[in-house]
Length: 88
Image (cartoon, rainbow, N blue to C red):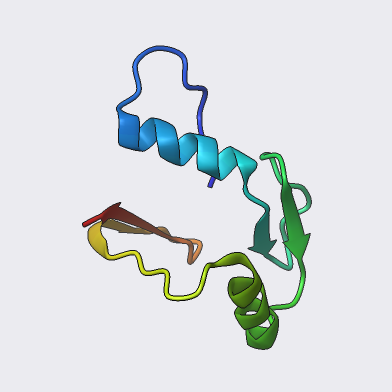
């Protein structure tokens, strides 16, 4: 997911998310993607659940919880699924 330019008005929650997103290290798991467009993003060719668990344990404070409400789902012919959520 890439955050678009924030020229003009942005609601506080969206603006805060954009700032946090830009500052976070991100991992994309793909065997076919050649390059990433957003900063601080790397491509991993193989998905390893143990590595993801370790990354989560290192990145998140103990006991952190974020409740999400599903808002939108789009499935594309190439198998990609877009999921949209909002914080509750």
